[in-house]
Length: 443
Ligand code: GLU
Image (tube, rainbow, N blue to C red):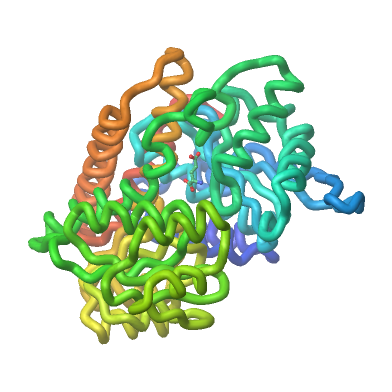
């Protein structure tokens, strides 16, 4: 049995109830075959793959909090510090009822390669809780965030582990967590990113994941003889990533026509109105039915369905495994040219393979959505030098980073004989840097 197969097998045996984690490990290790096979003896002797799939540590803790009626609740908190070979652990905090160890481990594992691809010095980690922020008052959110940080603060620090936002964690939550960290430790340091602009946040961090997705998509289209100009884009999600992907899509000449939330989706033949979307989701924190009320031509549909809309470019920006085999078939039948992942692992393995087999340009999330964490690393740099850069400065760095990521993954794919396979390219480019650092540092 090959080394890659051995490690996939042993990881499956050791983590039997972690399907999302195993999915991520399988996708990455399968695509590392060409590199591993060139140097199988060395990698095996040094147990590089076994060390990669086993987090440095996994912290799980109780998060008690009190609601507005005085009732006590308990949620489960997580921080998985996966790999710090090339920098402090870095990754977001996901607050969503679906959160469990498998989800946090898959996200932390992906983050190792994503962060490496940014070319910035950040390791991989992830955290979160099964707390559901939906429908909670500001005070309840504050009490939850304070309780979460009361345990988490022991394990993080500006040079150790720097959490940030993810699904359910935005500027409000980061603000409350930062306040609690400062209160407990008396340290005013860049321990979190995605902070408010008045206390160390970076301009363009809010926009970064969505903007970065479009910068990379545009470069991928250009390098394959297309352009975003006039392209119909289907976007899923209606959170931070989707909103700014839609905005940048318009700016680069595309036409985004869909978005979605957990209950339904919108098809707007005139193109999604960003101001209305922001008002519904960011200000009123309401459902997309409100978007349809404000836009007479827009259709609201219950359930899933974004991928049934005829489009040239598909941008899944909601959550893991939201683009399945039946969706991939529909997209291909409708003539899609490119799929670029704004969310983490939104496309199932089967759907990814189907898209690639049918010649669709496919940019995996660890490359395409790396703009968020890259800009977090820029926020860390600004915090370290106690300066703030202009929006234009951050945005132009972000653009360069995304264009470089595209070329790095494209070159890596070509070097190993998989030209145009950006999944293989992204995993190999991300892996090589981390593996070299691990080898150099010993075990
Ligand atoms: N949650 C984002 C991601 O998946 C951002 C992480 C960060 O900024 O540290 O990459």
